[in-house]
Image (cartoon, rainbow, N blue to C red; front, side, top):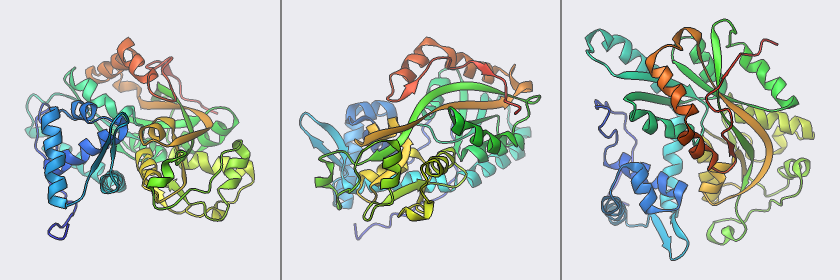
Length: 369
């Protein structure tokens, strides 16, 4: 790798709806992320819009250039990422998320400035949302309906603030069920007006601790010392010597959930090694654990399974999309609602570990107290 400077670069992308948004390096990173999620090069190629031959050619070309493997293949066990591949996916997710807010504002500015010059612009929706692996699949589905869904990953609170300020059409956020949810709603309600906004059910999902799978540690730099007892005990175990935690960023719904769970268990955040170490997506947390850089982190079950981690469920939560009432008749919004309520999408959602697709696409009034 001595001949390469692996540097991220901010560039303009002027693309039609049916054109790829990736340069070669971006295409490689998208492919590696898909391999991590699916455990299959063939499936990852399909998800990335590549032929199998092109996908393998891309991986081999960069493995030769970098002088290190990016993908490991084991007969009967599918494909997984080699340490360098995992680290690249990890960095990509973290950097994209870190600058998501600024990029969302820049995109909004460009669209406002150039709107008078755009003729025949297709249907478009801008979604600012807390990270969710299944939400990321919606743009491809809506593309078939000639709707461009642009997703910017922010925290739940930031996303709702963007909606309130008019910087996006839809905001995605999540809230735990039961008594924990009452505290979280207090943070969200300041950005929601029941007269102005309406909620759309997206999914019910499981959140919990993601930990290295049994037997996985032989391939990793360090062995996890985290055991797996019941809910309250497992949270206290995060304070044990040698346990390394990786957190989500402040303002995210997952960070809010963690703080509530710790308070319920009588665990002080500062007693957890790694509480201040932040990542910006479930995938980035899972990749950090899979790479051996941490022992545990809070996230959704789907992310844990995709990176081959064990999952300890701690809470069930509802994921909502919030939007303005006066935009409900917009054709692009109607296409989104039709997609969410379709049997095909609900089957796709229900097939994912930890997800419940019942009532997906239904409208819900904003809570007022």
